[in-house]
Image (cartoon, rainbow over all chains, first blue to last red; front, side, top):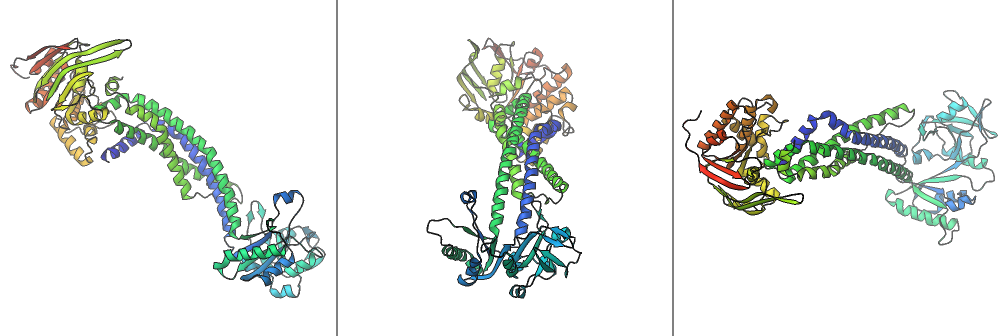
Length: 406
Length: 231
């Protein structure tokens, strides 16, 4: 242990003795780590912001949505849910709490005082706020009586207000959707952009109104969010819903589901999978630059061993074993790479922050601790691995030859 | 105590086999003061390397303090060097980046002694050679004589059974040479076994016994006449 401590001290001293050379040697590792950290911090920041967007969704919320397999989609087929599916959930599956159908209303455009815009028009019911965790920032949301009496009211998003040039407080104004006029009763809270698309460019109508507007179409674009009455029961409920919908859709055994029942967080999981893959790919590519950096370290360590032949000879004469010498040079290589890695982490994080703040609406860079630890650990490992050859060369030197070396 | 029996050392030099040592028998007892002399190429360096456990013989037996070292591995030899041998070299061989104190502490690192203890022992050894006030200096801030004293302190710090000096005055002027030899005389009087490799008769005259090596063999081995006075 004493010898190890001393070897550590000696390695550090030797690095400090040639500061410039040490820095240049580790530059490859430094740049490699900096790029890994910069890229990962951006991807992670991005993925964190997306996870946050979905975090409001309750964990007892499930969503039934249509699913079209890729093979079917390429044949032009598209599966949709029907209003019967909504009723099925409401009345025929036990354990279902709130049922919130969310329907895309095919509208030719939204108008206000001669201006037209094309926001997303959704029709849904009062419990949307609870199930999705989205609330109006002023005015009110759709209420049950709006549905029952098919009141022509609308809740608008902030982007839609902007596009239509509605007054700042648009409540009480009338907007035209298709050929019908709707009174604005509320404004949804601002959510910002996701992947460059505004999430506030929307108009929400009572579900029954939307249903009437879709006319004869029995199968509109629709998904149904619903809660489980008992949070412990979510998985079982999911199976019950699947079975019920399969029967309702008259699917034969063995035939693929034409729908999906997903927990709210499964979107997040899918997204995390994508960013995870991206991180891994980028990490792999940049990892190659770390290997190149490692080769640089090996190169300089070999030079250093030759240069310090006499020193090694002296140490051996004083009683250093092969292992003592090996440990010292390995530590030196490892420390060199680790220092480069640490500086690289700091620089990379800085670069990530700078890039994130330079791009408008880009989420702030995030570096998870495990990435920092992995980057530091990996760079040290690169140093040690590429230090093995020079270090064993040093350890194997013959003391007599080494002492004679000029 | 050194006992060499039938030592042969062969080197392969390309096609040729060179006999560096060809049947050497030697006994050096505790607290002897021996000069090893001979022209270059005589095999005296090879002999010194063997005595210093830097090398192993091709044939024969080397007992150091009763222990046969001729079959030891590299690492075992390193441990023997660390405990039993104190080297003093012609060109000092100090580590330039370390301070005087750290240089002297270095051999103790390989004994696994804690830092405080290493420091205490090294300080004492440096005081013994009269350099107690130069602990924090770097070797390049010292004169040749001072550097060699540091080297002697480093050789002594581990209390080796043999002090093995290879041309210790080769890089020093005559005055400093005399000082270093006086230091050796003093160490010998204090009970230290000293082996000096040299080609200078003056230096050899300090010793009590002279061994002359030539063509890989010991050709002369005699007790020096006692010196009239020590300068």
